[in-house]
Amino acid sequence: MRILKLTFLKHVDGLKVLVSGLLLAFAFQSNFVTACTKPVPPEMPNIEVAVVAEMVKAQKSVKRYMKEGNEYLACTKNDLQHDAMVARMEKMANKFNGLIRDFKALKKK
Image 1 (spheres, rainbow, N blue to C red):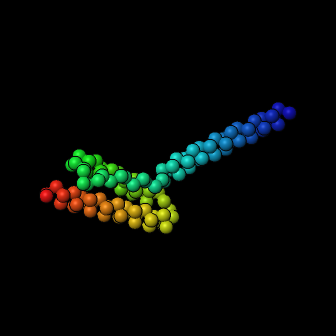
Image 2 (cartoon, rainbow, N blue to C red):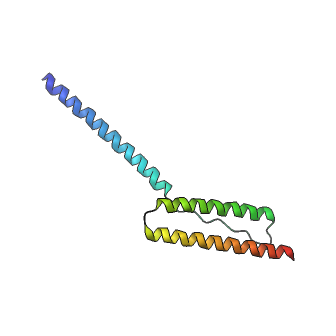
Image 3 (tube, rainbow, N blue to C red):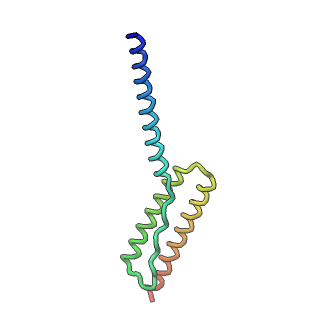
């Protein structure tokens, strides 16, 4: 009877380890999934009324977007999602560079 009791306790301890391991795996998996989120594109200022400080703020927002985009690219394993994110990042870079050119041209007038 005593041997049976000890064997049962070993199984209970093993089950506790198994359940703890599964909970830990789910915790890491949920952290990994939340880390793999698409960044939200930043708002661009209206260059007709913007001042330099707003353009600098927009530049920082674009840099943050690009950094988060690169993190997303490193995270995603889906080729279509990867390609779509690259296209969005290129579009954002072109849009911002165009705004900067237009802003500088407006301010020279």
